[in-house]
Length: 265
Image (tube, rainbow, N blue to C red; front, top):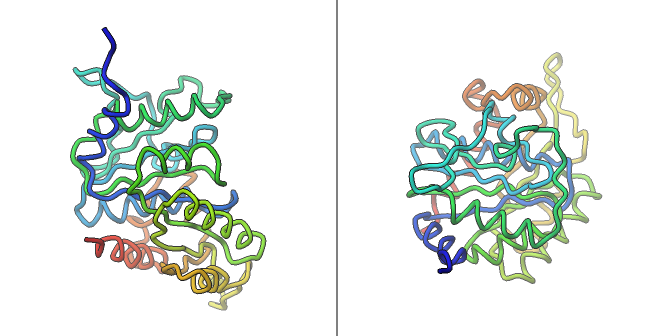
């Protein structure tokens, strides 16, 4: 006798989730995973029930950035149980299924599609206000799978100000429009560095490129995130930057961005 339809299991799980966002980038190295983590933490800190799904199959970093260790467990219904980060935030990542965290995942597209569908339909997410999905860079299998499985997912596209990133962000915009995925907005990350000694702001990667691209394409610009070495240190040590630096410019920016996410009806 055949088992439950995996697509139906995914639909049932998604019906319990109010808002779904996929965080994308046209290229690597723009801080997309850091943005995903901090969006989820900011929403959870506001009292919402949040899930954070890491679909970066080949480079899953979210557990390390949150200080989560160990392996995923299953509940009585043999569903994967996402790892609790706090009372309001739970996390599921490929890394939490790997006994050896340094093992390379060598999978083709169909296998990745099946795994991501299982992460959605065969995991005990429960009732969520928000699901934040961290996707690998580019426009390949993983974001395409999300577009197919979660047609109401909204894209948050992350870029840095320099032209090489902006050229790739335009590909992400093209991808979303080709697969009929709604683009919620663009975030310009690493936008300026303020010297802690002289308080002078230096635009290491330029500035304003993300905002100009958003304007040119008629997309909401969600804001700029300055470069802060403490963000890097917190991510490396599994510490929440926002909880440690509550009055920082980055924390205030995430408060504003998640405020826009709260305004969706």
